[in-house]
Image 1 (cartoon, one colour):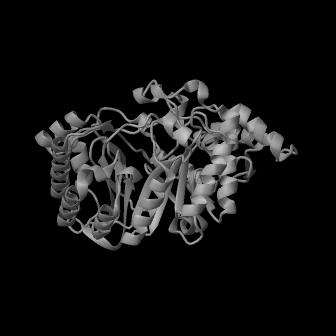
Image 2 (cartoon, helix red, strand yellow; image 1 turned 90 degrees about the horizontal axis):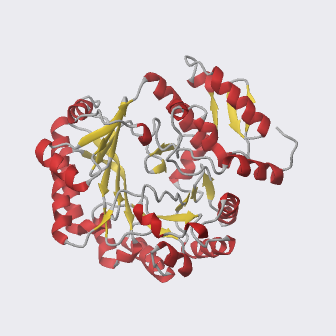
Image 3 (cartoon, helix red, strand yellow; image 1 turned 120 degrees about the vertical axis):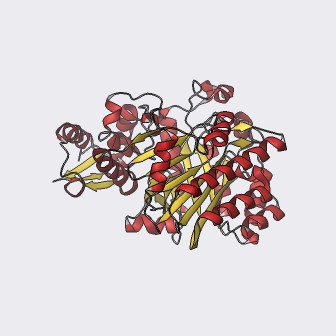
Length: 453
């Protein structure tokens, strides 16, 4: 470990690494490595080969919003017509029916998640139809984790009670920032009182596990705004907080062109914002989980982190350790032991494919044995900030990677002890840089990703 003090080390890391584009490693290989040679037949075979009577996860993607925020990088679009929403709901039912034809009997859903977009746009009746369809083809675990992403601007007491009646027991509210001038800059006006009321309504209804999603690195955002956000969080006391760095990719997301690039914080400012958020939330009693999550002491995410059973998937850090994730909806990704398979992202084309073939598989990648091994290494680094290569990589030739690791040790990011790699405290915010050492696909291409900080 270098004898440099902590502050110079941080400055050195920021200058060298913070601007580097690296994956978030919610999967390995990443979605950027998917190809277009996956077919619905490939998908059918994977569904048929799921182990009978096993537990699985299901993810439902609803790619619609009432309005599109400037910062959004999701697969979603604005819709106002109810007939369009209803037609999409019917398409989800058709896909669930098709999946049900291929899977073995007696599969149990341990984790069910709704993402978007704004899933609640389907309405309580539309969501209830989908839950019923799933129950026709799957068993629901006695202690199922049933989570939904919600926009607090479109919630009321009745809707929250309806979600509870559907079995929802965790809700994630898209907060982003509480400062009005930041909300104006990102096209999402959402007063504190609105988030406060939504949080209260969810808890009164019986949905007591409430998460907040926050962003740093937004236009015009500085440390004063960060302090204000954390003060407001203390008043509402969510169970978990996911705090992501805004990824400005206007060349890929046209709506992000509405954001003033000149007003975005630089790498040093983003790093300082992330560090201040971590400090203030820990002062409030939250425990840091990985690189961008925080949880209360009793939360299952924190328990998983302590037990080193934390996982990472396309939704971020999770307690979900199910071996298979079945994605339903446009752009949804399914995870199997030997493949990732993604649905068509374009909503109209996806719907036509479901109508014609029952499945809309279009992209993905076969996961080799080497990929599986590297995935475990990357996941251990991202979740635990350490990995013992003697336990995971005995069959891999890592001579090139070891050369890079020695350099990272000299720079103070990691500590090497035999075959064990441990991120230093100063190096933890840059764990994606260390994970990328084991990413063979990045040797071929490294563009199109968000910045390391």
